[in-house]
Structures are given as C-alpha cells and as structure tokens.
Length: 123
Image (cartoon, rainbow, N blue to C red; front, top):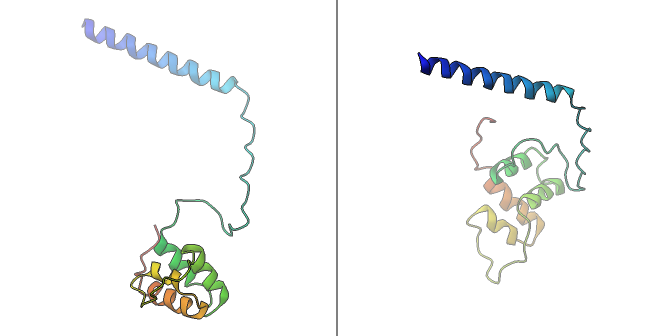
C-alpha cells in the first residue's frame, strides 16, 4: 500500500511539473522567423530530403534529352570529370567515365552504365 501511495505522489509531481513547463512555453514569445537558406548558384531544385545516391543522380540524368550538353552536364555534376589517365582503356565502371576527354564519348560512356542501373520505386 505504501508503494502504491509513493507511486501516486511521484506521478502527480511529474504531471504537475510537465503542466508547469507547458504553461511557461505558452507564455514565451514566438521564436523569430528563420532566415531562408542562401541558394547556391549550382542548386537547381529543392534541397529537401536526404542526399541522393550516385545511382539516383545518374537515373535522374536519363530524364534529360539524350545526346545533349544538358545531360552531359548532369552526369558531370554527379561524377566530375578528371584529366585522362596515361593508359586510357575501356571503362570498367561509371567512375571511369570521368577520365574520357571527348564529350561525346564521355556521354556515351555514362549512358551505357546509367541505362543498366535497375529502376526501383521511389522511397
């Protein structure tokens, strides 16, 4: 019986403390509106949600018209180009496409790998 009475007292005190904290929050002035984040020149879409994976970025590039500079720019944003290696062989993965210097060849390289990515339903 004493344990039950002690439990009721503790719960009553907890409820009273919680109500007091809520009342103080209601009396406080509303927070100042936050400044909108500065937009970067490169951002073209809303920045909401988790960051996209490389596969999601490459699949998004496939929505742009084929064989256009815009699609190549999209691929280059996902995988920035690098100076060619001394031995330029065939690309074994999408990351090797960044070493292809010729733009048309780089676009074909990216297209070849991006089209092989399985398309899953959105999250």
